[in-house]
Image (cartoon, rainbow, N blue to C red):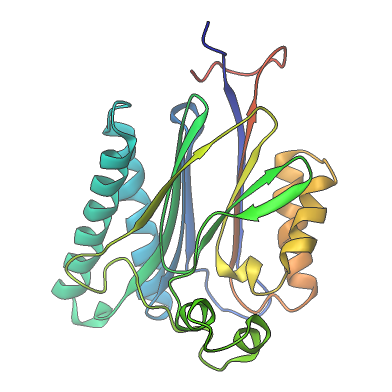
Length: 252
């Protein structure tokens, strides 16, 4: 007998303490198990347009994809978002060079398909432990993986904001896609780097472990990032897998 699986979800975005506009965007279609976070770049107008357009297109495409091949659906959604952002930037000189990071998850039954482009991240919180599911497409992260610099050096590097892959900056883009088996009680966190640049993973885990509602936890994460600087826009999306007797909408 197939176990019934349910989802709870929440999302929140904040301008932070320094920026004059919010270039982050997120999309949630909880009943379809779809979650997307984007962090735009290219100035206030360009960044906002890129992130919102990418979220809109990717979410729409994922909603229209079938459950038979989640990977193909994810690839198609990201390709469509890239085409739309690239086309918009190419047709308007004032938006030239705009782009956005993207991290997305689609959950079906007890499986999550996770994709990302750039340095927005996905984490899994399970049994009190937080594990990162994505690798930043950034210059310093790649230097760390190649052993050229340490993680501490990466944190202090003046090049830490340089990303090596983004939605909309080239005609095509190659996302990284992975599959994750989920268990009841698991929580997925999708977030922009406005959270992870301010808070270490240990502090993020501690906030989630506190056990408040998902809405309150999103708020707590953002407030914690703002208290130590809030130098960028901050976006958090949480999705919790549940089963059993909780009174929640049936997901699958």
